[in-house]
Image 1 (cartoon, rainbow, N blue to C red):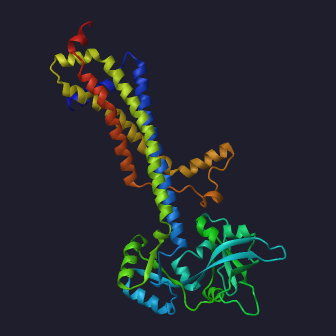
Image 2 (cartoon, rainbow, N blue to C red; image 1 turned 135 degrees about the vertical axis):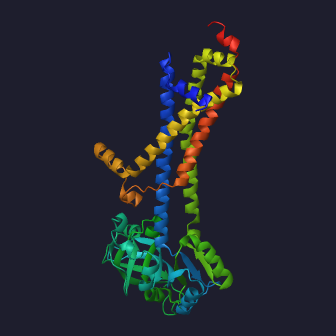
Length: 421
């Protein structure tokens, strides 16, 4: 062991006359540990939410939406699908879709509740291979609001928030109200409506989809919209993270207009990323406060060890060695706190749902309401890159906190240090 590291370790282990310095050292170490632990747990939860929401968005939206470059209906969707799958082997499944902007009204003599919605017509057999339309009607992944079955002829599936807004349940009737493209000369009514039976209530675990979207068969959508052909093609990819480059290839080489699942929710994902960065910066202040504690601890050690520093200097120890000695002592505190925080944070993250359940039981409250957060558990995902960034940031802050005390120790005059000894 080098001289500086040996002396720094002795200073940490040695008995001090001033017990207060030892207490401050423990508090500084605990402060770093708590800060690192909080960063790991909070960023793990935020990453978990990010991944869960990404899965929900990709499940509710196709990885790619391919439409005509000029916005015209696609008259021959089967031919387009064959062309896409032949030239883009990354596409594993595809199905046509049509979107109708409509107002929904519940049936019955008192049915006066209205809600705006997108009525999406799909080929049910193909769509179940592209999106989670079938899974959204089940109780998988903690769903509690889903019910019913996929739509058939004359039926409709509503997002559960949309269904709650209308006050309808499975088996009730709703009217799909749309503008009349060509009013009859015998009628001045500018709207048309089609009555459909609610066959299912879907929970996509994503607020936009659950609030605005409903689903019908492709034939029903064609009757409502009065359009020949479809609006576009939903595509599923082997790797959804490559959707951008595949969409660019389709736009340039095939002459279609392709949009990705990420583009439709770009601002949402950007907001999540900004929140994660902001939370990282805010929680780093905990580590920064612990760094100030380390600074104060080392300053007290310097004041207590004036005689030792004077003796070392008279023995020929250089100012550089004194600086390194106190920097190493501060790093010992920071590294031990960081290591304890990393281990504690990972353990806490692994058992966060059990810990939350125990706290909820003791306090008699629901800490994580599945109806509010759309999940039956606290999502947690720890990435090694996040742990590395947290560890590196904590060590760097610890290192910076050692600079002034180490410099002040090196400036001590050995004559003044030993004058009254």
